[in-house]
Image (tube, rainbow, N blue to C red; front, side, top):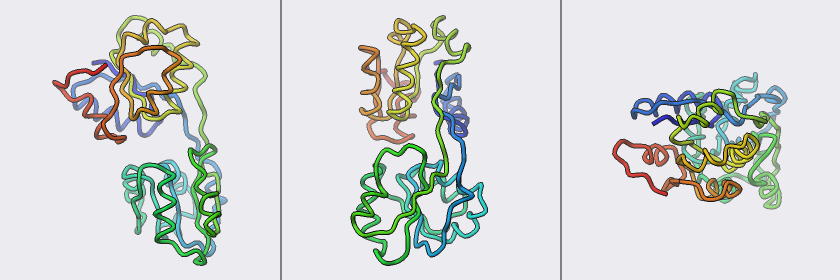
Length: 243
């Protein structure tokens, strides 16, 4: 199957290789681009731990001089994907939390010391949950430097538009509500509703699927759990498509 991958780099390239190993063809069409900005200004003085709710947080820090000192600090990570990225970058003490950012607050409150020094949240310019605010209400000191920014695509590439119009795309992979929202907006902008309703939409969660409502009824398959392994399971050879 020819698949449209909407993840930003470098995740898109890594996913492409895994999908090709399953026998699929892939067109990469990132709908969000990531820029690492602000990591050089991260102040770790007296910090007791780091918090990351995205791989991009730890990737951004890895580009800065602060990374030398950061590696020795405990790092609370949302989900196994962010935790794995932190370990690959050399963080020594990675505490893997739940996949939902809000649930990470409970874990941190159980293990961190209220008076043990500030927590440093490696944030993006938009966050799904107010982790810093929740922790402050519990009495923690939290620094929240913005270490990466996101830019949304304002149109699809001519390659993607052409393949969608010619019926070459069999499915699109959507990993976040934000990406699904952008995808739906661009489908409408480019007058591709008819084409979109013929392809399968592989969604990480029901929250992702919910962002496709502006398109009307679309073919879809939702991962049984919100992780990459379950998304790949939807695309395994011989698996029957759901609707």
